[in-house]
Amino acid sequence: MTCRNVPDFVTDTECSHCGNYIEMKNAAGTIKYCHLTDGTLLLKKGDKVTKGKKVAQMGQSDNATVSILPSHSGSNSFFVHSDEVASYEFKSDTFLRVAMSLLPITAVVSYQIDAIWQLQFRNMYAGLCSTILHIFYFLQFYTHLKYKSKTITYIYTYLYHILIWIFKTGGNIIYFLYHHHEKNIFHQCIFALRTIQDTIFISFICIYKIRSYDPLICVQHKALFSVISRLEIILAILVPIFAQENLVKKTVANISLFILYDFFSVYYHLFTLRLKWALWLFVVFITISVVNEWLYFVNHQWYLCDQISTGFEFLAECACCLVIIWQFKLPIIILPSDQT
Image (cartoon, rainbow, N blue to C red; front, side, top):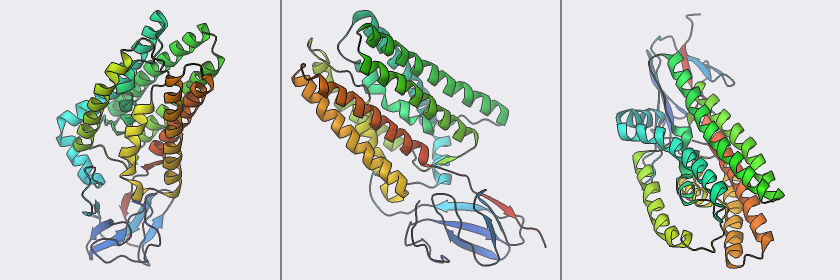
């Protein structure tokens, strides 16, 4: 919900810059403010706001409330919902809650199984199952494990992400051992770095959930079904390719990253400058990776193309993780002001 050159005080039904506003209700009536990505509030003179803590004090009413209203412009299948609407839809959709909780676990389990399979049978490809499901590993940022007790919520959140980390790290270690056996130092370094990257990424996601940070990017049922439908098309294309005996495919995330880029790009107009930079680097890195992977598939003697493809896939994953981490925003808490 980025808004540049915001007017000092927004009185229209929608901000002409970002299409969203915050509506505060107190005894004096309704006041509307523009909402920024970092949670900053533009208040009238006399109101108090603490930007670092995102705590605003206003009026003399004890019943101040906040609601972020979405823009209704655009007809894309991925809609930008407010936090209230997205949260309500998520809670009311049992299928979506269960799917978003199980799919990331399924992705990392399949990743480790494919790694074990490759270590045992010395396959020349990264694994069809993990290649298809890898996208859901990145979508763990929208998994909600909330219960009435905060303590139970924290425990489940920690255990959930620790479980994801165990399977993902286990797969990385197995791939590392495979390339160690093959005496491929370059790929050993990549999987060592990938283990560090996954640890940092999962740790940030877990911490942000514990601190109740809100994601800017919302995964609704329409978006999830769209992702699944695209995976079905890709699966139909990949099955005959993976059936070839001479297939050489060592990248895992390329397909997932391409779909994620298309998904993230819908929110481009809401991104901050650093998010836009990360998204552009994301698409550049993944394009270079895919081009070199296909060149290596055409001629297995071009080992440099294999290294370029693997290296830029890792960089694309780093950029994707940055987009996911940076899109989180602090929760906005409105407190009633003192009578004084």
